Every structure is written in structure tokens, then in C-alpha cells.
Image 1 (tube, rainbow, N blue to C red):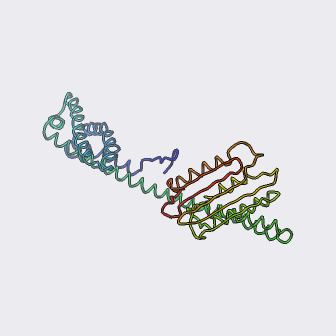
Image 2 (cartoon, helix red, strand yellow):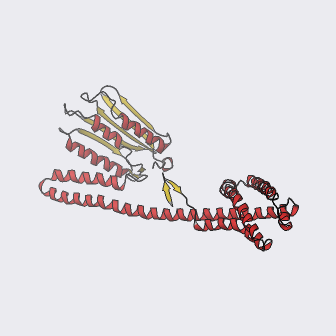
Image 3 (tube, rainbow, N blue to C red):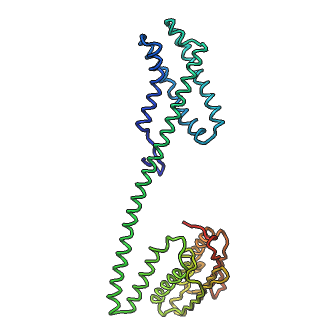
Length: 354
């Protein structure tokens, strides 16, 4: 199955075409062999009549059957089917009226006459053709579903292959970082520690960031690694207090707390004065997680509200994850910037954000 702008492009199947050809030929073929066996020129007339009304059965199959029968609107389907039979009869008798204007043999004139037997015959043929048209739509739908399933299986195999390939690059990088760590450890333990922290952060992004939840201890370790890297980068080293009281196995969405900490080092560190005191608190209590950060206002930074975009995006994510059942507050009193977050820790309140 091909796709155009992410929509499937469905093609006619050979067996579908074969059945439409059968529908076009069965009526004139049967009538020619049973009624007009020795009258070959009538064969072509019957075939042309059937080809003329064939689009009506295409409409019946593609619209009435698909939109009403398959949608289980059986009452509308029944009414439309009866109306379709009547419409076909009107169309046929209009054609027969034109044919009766020509010189015809008695048997031919009787065949095209407006008699009860003609109405019954054409009604039966109409029902037979409608049944074939309905069957063709069933076959087409089944083939479409089978082809879609095959396409999905191919896509799934391709996705798994790409996923396995994607795993090679990070693990190659991790192995390289491990080699660098052992080399640096002999000459510069501080550099080795930096490489180790970086490796752990990258491993978190690869292995954990796409999960629905991660253990709270894993999230805290990620924050510790990030803070350690920032402390190495900033001189003089900032004074950071991180109060922690939590259950290590408590599940929370990944990267939930990172915005607050990143906001501190992006907007709240004064590299000119070098006087940076940062307070971070993570408390788990009575089914809730309380997280807060506090840092002095960096007076040498611009006038933009610290981390306004990052916090706005975090608020949107929290609304999706917790259905509004959270508290996020920021306070700028001119001297300190404080951010606080309160979220429930019941698993049932967390929704998949992917």
C-alpha cells in the first residue's frame, strides 16, 4: 500500500476488477445464451445496456454499501437499496422505450416491453448485481486490511532495525567515555569525575527520558550529576545546599524537576560578583512531593523574568500529566527568586504525556 501525505493510496485489485467484469457480463451473457441464442446482434445491445448502467453499481458499492451497511445503518441501507432498485428500473425502461422505436422481432419486442414479467426479471437481475457489488466491496475491504497489516509489519520490522542501529551509537559513545575516564583517572582525577558525570547524564537521556516514569532516586541522581558538572564549570564554586527526604523507589515522570535547577544556573548565577548561594529542597510527605529552589537575583543579568519560557512549558506539561492537580508557584521579591512545586505521588493521577 502506497501513501500520499501520510494517507493510504488504495489501488484496485485484480480480483476486484475481475468481479466487476463478471458483473458487467453475467446479465447479457446469460440472457443471450438462454433467450437470444440465435440472435447475435442482440448480444451487443444487451452488453451495451449493462455497461451503461455499470457506474450505478459502482456507486452502490462505493457509497451506499460502505457508508450505510458497513456503518451499521441498516434502516437507511434498506431504504436506499429499495430506492436504488426502483431507480434502475426507471433507467432501464427509459432505455427500453428507445429500443422499442426500432424494428424488432416479436421475441425481442416482448423482452423489452413494459410487462410484469420484464419488471420481475429486471428486478431479480438488479438484486443479483447489487449482491455482487456488495460482495466486491467486502472483498476489497478484506484485501485492504490485509495489505495494511502487511505494511504495518514491514514498518514495525524497519522500526526495530532502526532502533537497534540507534542503540549502537550511544553505546559506542559510552564505551569511548569509559575509556577516556580510565585514561584521565591516572593523570587528572577531577577530569575523570567530570567525564563520569557526563556519561551518567547521557545514559539517563538515552535509557530513562522516554519512559513514562522513573524512580525518584534516578531523577535525583540525574540532578546531582548536573549540579556537579555546573559546580566544576563555575568559578568560584557556588554554595549549594540540597535537602533530600524521599523514598528512592517512588515513580515520577522523568525530567520533571530539571527545569528548576537548570533555571538557577542559566539565570541565577552571578559570575561577576562570584557570590552565589543556592538552596534546593526535595521532600516527600503524605502522598505529595514538594520541590523548591531559591537563589539570589542576578543583578547583572537582563530584565527578563528568569526561566519564564521553561517554566511556562513545564506548567503545560504538568497540566497534561496531573490534570491540573498540582501547584507551581514562582516568587521574585527583588532579592531572591523562589520556585516551588507540589505534585501528588499516586500513580493513578499521572497520565502518559507521550
